[in-house]
Length: 457
Figure 1: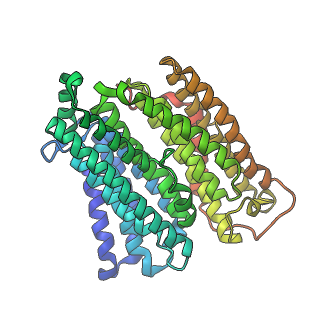
Figure 2 (figure 1 turned 90 degrees about the horizontal axis):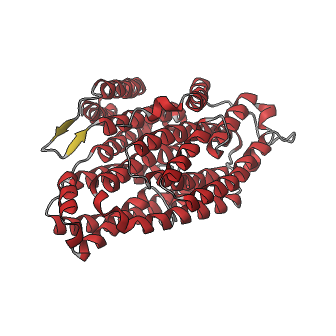
Figure 3 (figure 1 turned 135 degrees about the horizontal axis):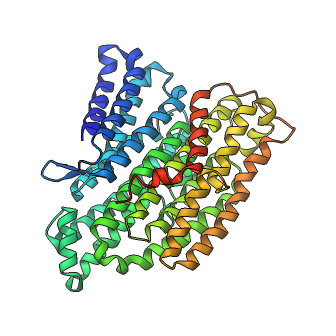
């Protein structure tokens, strides 16, 4: 809870930076507050606490994801420093980013459906504005408008689902809902299952799984590159944390009832995302479809409802986020130097800036699942967990789609090592951040058990 209070306080301070004229100190304040939130989350480890009449609960699951969300945001803030260069927009963009993080923390720590809705709305409203923050770009305006419309529809489904579940159980508290469903599983009214499906639709939109992914490629491409990186890492991690809390904590007694729907979503997500990515010519859209595809692998792990699946999920999100932020950092540097995010803009990058090319290669290989990098062990653990529960067909499909994914990841790698070059040499990036992210990718591949053990009961 202390971490959430620090983040909310930082958001209000960011709003006052323009009035009190201390914008020059804002960057230092953001970094210090994020570090403080991470430390406070670690200090609370092992001592679960409930607040506001049990509406939010900070247990090890919530604390681990809170620390991860703050760490991702800290890395992203360093990556996105060019996004905050314009002094006239620094304070409001920082405030929106911080409030989005606050919404994400609520999404992984809620114990009441009303708090889930509150967290999603705090996060979503901030993102609607950030997506359209490049006001001179028609694509950015389109991205914000499309995200707002689709997000509003998804929220409607979620709210209606919550209302139906409340009507059937008489409570918004997920612990009480679990007990009620467990005791009355065979006699639950049909509208309860309709509410369950509506909640599934609303949360599936937030994690951008097929067939509710149609907004993601256009919104990711139209938004400023730093905002796209934020959505594909911090936002996706928060949404998956909420998805887990709802369907592996609240509705576990009726899990078989919606298992077929989740399996269909996994199949569609793996196939559609990876096949469509093959035909993309923009690295930004490739990473967008890559983000959608990885959701399919994560959901495959969550088909197992035991405690170790949470550790696998946490490990996968750490590995995925590190590789994604590294890839987006390089993409932003190339975009700033060439004005394009197409695969052709990466031509000859190795001969212009070997450091960026090597980092991008490691990030792409990790996302593709090539050993001994973190992404490989993430997929290996997912497949192993699914095989434990006899989902052999889904694992075979996951392996095949992973092989398809190698093709579009290698499109970028091959382009970087071509002798023909295009554009000027990229120079605007954080070397320290890229070194740290690369070391994280390598370390996670060598010591996966250390991260998985954080969430295994």
